[in-house]
Image (cartoon, rainbow, N blue to C red; front, side):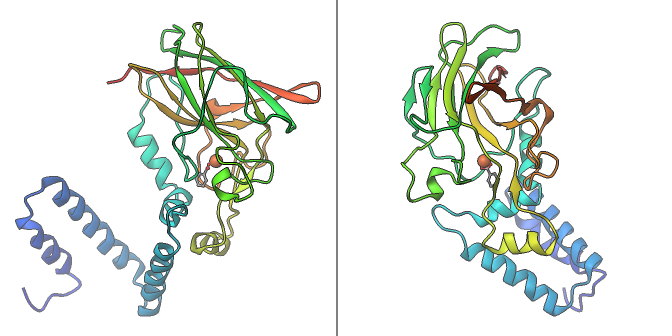
Length: 274
Ligand code: BEZ
Ligand code: FE
């Protein structure tokens, strides 16, 4: 086709997909082309604006390495990660709700029996306890809670070269009655990495880069669907404006004072594997 105009160009590009023999790829590219062309029609970017957009994506890619994934951060801060999470984790009533994994999960944390202290000699600490059960309330023995969180300096162990590997991380197994318990440090609210293009974008949009304090969990049990989630601290100043939109009411808990320290109780409910 020649002499294409702004009125028939989209159809001409879509027609080029006719030879694609992968139906899912064809569906994805059809939708992408329609939305991308629709975006350009709506915005009518100037050439300078289009180049600025391309430069932003280029810088975002250049910021990525083995431990820094700026594109995931972009997806997180635009709410796309939580939309993906919502679409892929539709839960039955009563099951623990999911939240965003985030970029700081590291596989291979040490395994512990219930009662472990993940921060010996450090404080202020919190004793976290509860149980893991199925949708009918039956306790799940031998379930595994894979736990990670920030230190009081607002950094995960992978971000902090002075921290021990797996600091404030661990896998805790439930007892015969489904109960679990571990001591950790009271989590703090912290900034997502803001020294790159995504941080600059947030700044230009008048948005802050903070997340409310939370502890991350992946809870697994044989025969059940694992849940990737976070337990947030009641009263945190960023609960309403989480930079990555991850907060759900059912995941917010109150920390109770316990002498010099804190305690918190949270029960997890898993749905059966499909
Ligand atoms: C996190 O909770 O660790 C996190 C999630 C999304 C972006 C950055 C950090
Ligand atoms: Fe986090």
